[in-house]
Image 1 (cartoon, rainbow, N blue to C red):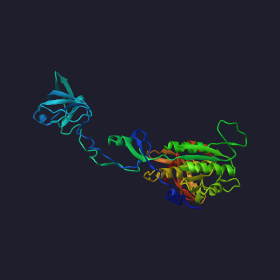
Image 2: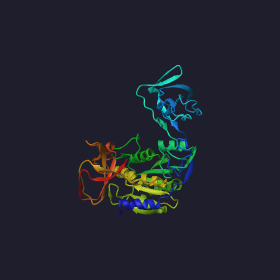
Image 3: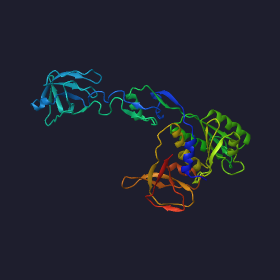
Image 4: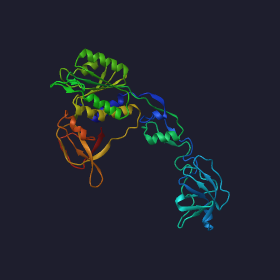
Length: 399
């Protein structure tokens, strides 16, 4: 068996980079950027007024002036006007350019107006640059704002829009197939016998993929039949970029997935990782270029392998900047018995000092998926036997 780190390295070495497409900006939320974006012009592009009030020349106050004739009104979107007199002022609105001849803005709350004259209130302080966002202080024209590999959230979309980008180059969405196997599985809503179980893993995998922005997700259930498995897997390998299978990869007589994939020319890169849960994990590459993740069928194993391997691999295939997992301290001691890397479900809690901690929430085994409902993810603990004390810091993987 290989280590989880070795599995990461092998997956990264073999996974194919997805193609680049151009999309309208409104369709790019959650996508991975495939181009650098630079500032279209200085940001802000002019000395920008940041408060409603009056713009004036601060030097007039040094000469004792406290009242100023309102010469004009300038709103956001208006072309800037110029101050005609050193003892005048311009009524301005937030977002407008600073009028020529002015160097500061006094907020409307600090002035009173009467008969076209604005007077400063008692204690009002005025200094050059007050309530003015100077041109180019955020970014200069041509400055690098976003780099290829950035996942586009709301702030990044705003930056791209401000840079004048109506369309941008992003990674194409992968075509994903989620396939469950097993004669015992029955769809939710269908009649079920005492010896059967509900088909839940495929729904969990599809939900995890969609929650991470992957929309092109097909699902199918296959019986433990060699011919059916081979025929349907052949179809999916020819029509999808990534297959995520659940079940049929262990050592039982009806664990037919590895044989079916081998018959289709899918090369096994690795089978079995020194971890619990999820030891039978299988990964391979098809002649079509499709990647295949064949996950153990126990629900906790499936959930862990999706978050630990599948989601990071898909992000890498889209060209996203690789980020190290968040590290977090255990809230309580936990003992790892097996000589295997251990994935421990946890709930995130805040201690009395305001620090986030990982509270162990172990399951009753890899089939106890109901216990995962109250957890936020899992931490990766080194192989045992060992007891890891409260405060031990480990990588956190969120669901």
